[in-house]
Amino acid sequence: MIGVLVSGAGSNLQALADAGLPIVAVASNRRDAPALRRTSAPTAAFELAAYPDREARDTAMAEWLQAQGVALVVLAGYMHLLTPSFLDRFPDAIVNVHPSLLPAFPGAHAVEEQLAAGVAEAGATVHLVDAGVDSGPILAQEPVPVLPGDTPASLHARIKTVEHELLPKVVRELCAR
Ligand code: GRF
Image (cartoon, rainbow, N blue to C red; front, side, top):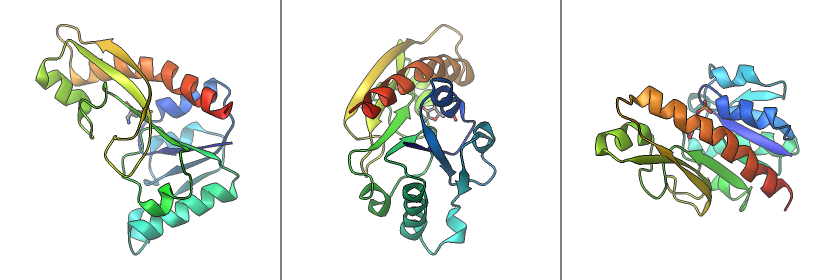
């Protein structure tokens, strides 16, 4: 039973659903995240402003996911760091998809930074989540070519095409554990 955390467009959430994976809940840190409109599963928003601090927000979000029966959490474009109050409730059961060949180019601006660095190959990585920034153990990754004339948008679109295959594949394997 999968819970998905989103903040943005939701194309990876869509890929998980299209792969027929059992998504039972979708949560976001943003009430207005377009991704929330891409699912027929129950949704909830946990905006930081509604809580005294991050720990309280993360506790509420984890408890809601657990109440929906979630055993595996997938971060599909979720743009906040998770605190131990969330991480400790899902040990070794939180995965993230990131648009670079980690450990290179962690953080929120990986696509722009790969272009600025002039790398010939960007990539996509799926990894287990710990308290660091895109730093948990790597489960799978795949290179993506950088082409002449690429913009952040064109490169990110090419990376997402790879993410949409890689993420459901890894999540399916984790479900079969
Ligand atoms: C993806 O590129 C993912 O790697 C990164 O955020 C982006 C989310 O895209 N963490 P989407 O919302 O799934 O379309």
